[in-house]
View (spheres, rainbow, N blue to C red):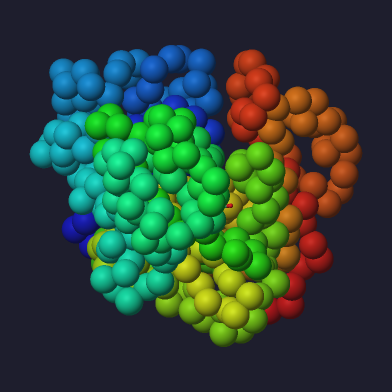
Length: 365
Ligand code: AMP
């Protein structure tokens, strides 16, 4: 067994208590690991299935240090853990993906700049720090365009569409961009044919395995369905994979990196966003691939060999958002469906309550 291998029985620390942490903890348990979840309440989805929990704020440095001492390796399931918190943990125990990766992924300006420096295309963009700045950025980038916060945005939150008749003062105020969000970023609007994503796993030895590109369809800015595989050209698949591996290697990721991309009608592939963690668009892999994304994360951060990421069958993943979860019994009765519920006690509109993987016929090897 190589030196950097953490054998089963070791404890994995997970920052964040949501469904991604829950499914990571379940996959870890299958391989004989224990999970210690750092979150805010004992009722959170991951805390419900973990061996241990620390209930504290990410800014509580004593709680963070004690957590770091209690675990053998740490990872995160939540985008916005402060970098100082991650660095404090990294001073005590390994954190994968590293704080330097998180610092790029938490900042839309840094992630787009990083991609462009590797020769990977994105929408054109400009940093914006005031309404006056926005006015000149609109003159440069043109309309339609999208104003986003540099940090802390997800599922379309903190985004404002900019049209020819938009008043920059109003749009700036509406976006909520300011010193707390690292300012704003104006992006040219991409008239895409479809949105795809690739998830790459990369081990401590630099080995990587990518899942097949999938298509993501959104409703109200939230992922609604993932179609695996994406119905795009062989050239697009090749380019999407090159981009994903290029970013994972460029950032020196250990763990998972999800890359969301736009495919234009001319076949150009542009990176929209990266996430160094398990991703909603990878939930299909749990039932349709030889190794699912959560097990792959556990393997990567524990120094185990990566699993085979290939597809056993095609699949469609459907998110159960808000009261869509009430149909759970129908999915249980459907032989093609695999149901995953997150244990959330309260159903709210827009809240991800679970997902269903609809599986196609087994593929031939
Ligand atoms: P994001 O928070 O950056 O992932 O954006 C959420 C969704 O808004 C994306 O999945 C796209 O559907 C849409 N979107 C974001 N940025 C752009 C853009 N520059 N052009 C067109 N659509 C966008």
